[in-house]
Length: 280
Image 1 (cartoon, rainbow, N blue to C red):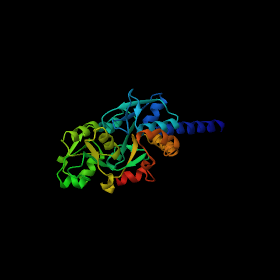
Image 2 (image 1 turned 120 degrees about the vertical axis):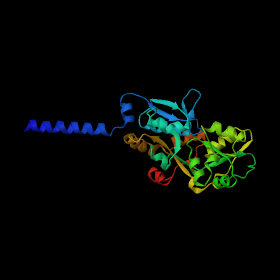
Image 3 (image 1 turned 180 degrees about the horizontal axis):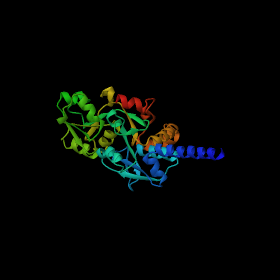
Image 4 (image 1 turned 180 degrees about the vertical axis):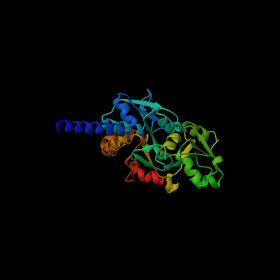
């Protein structure tokens, strides 16, 4: 009887160990093996970019680091790539988390798993000073046959096409530097991005460019940004969300991101990723 009971206990223990192993995703396995957590991001000031020594900078990176620290993880490796390579890079295992602060979109939710949102922002245009073509929203771009430039893979492409903008009038470039160059050179009439991004670009133009009013954009262009993971890292995402709930909007967080322009107005509110994935 005792032998049978011992066999049963051992069997249950082995089953529990097998179950625990089964639910552990690749990121959990990497951490258990002593490997660093690799953060993937592009050159997106002030969201996520590399500092002078290659360290993760930008509010999305800093927020991610803050959450990971609360979880007990500080062994980090930054990996910078082009925006268009973020999702493919994550899927290929070149890094473990996308910290670029991507907008949570239905099309992206099909390929990656987002944690709960960390910010919400609208969209705006970067235009020549005085806005000579009067471009305030995507309808204006369509009606005036203007050329719009934005980053490859940016949500602005989807929103412009939804408004009927001809794909031939949408110039896709690697990132912010190229958006700025295209508008300055007159190759594009407007550069599309978040008010924060285009605001940074306008500030660097020496008064040659300005930013349009985000309120003139369609309401559906309001977006929530989040941190993305591989879909099979659900165990880690659950733990990340738990720590994020405690960190988001805290005095500690707001102090850490203030230098990047992040204010309480950017906090994501009550919308959850499931709803955002279904409606954006």
